[in-house]
Amino acid sequence: CTGFNTQSKHRHGTDCKRGHEQQELILYLSQVVYQLVFANNRNISHAAGEFLHKKLLTEDLEEVLKEHRAQRHTRKIREPHIILKELLRFFLENEVSEHGAYMVDSLWETVEVLRDWKSMTELLLSDELGELALNDKKEKSTDCD
Image 1 (spheres, rainbow, N blue to C red):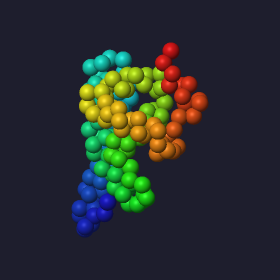
Image 2: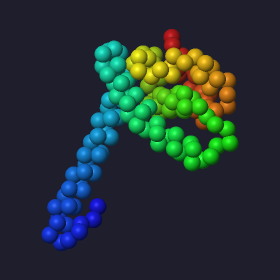
Image 3: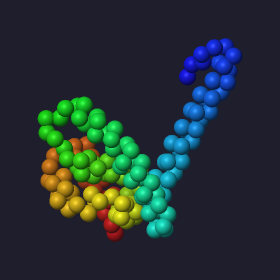
Image 4: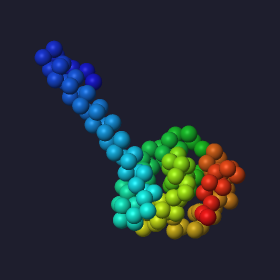
């Protein structure tokens, strides 16, 4: 942030600082809400799932799609595959594997691709998962006992 003249410089600097603090607060609150996707209370997890769907899978997905197009992959990856990969990335980054079923339940109503068995099967049979593919350790941590 830069000021236009000396009189407004102090006020503008304060406004920039406030704006930065607001962005940090929004990011922190988003992270808290994301964790609620794994809550065992269905009402809370469904509300968090709707937020996750709106933020991560709607707003942020456009950025992911742009990056994918900018890299000019030789093989076109279908949008449902990108959504599934983003969900898997979210799941793995949050390391709450014992509550994976809660995450699926919280997103079931709002994320249509979770019910798209054809896209899911295609993704699992392809090599598109790359670094997201589950190794033995990750697979064991996701087992439901």
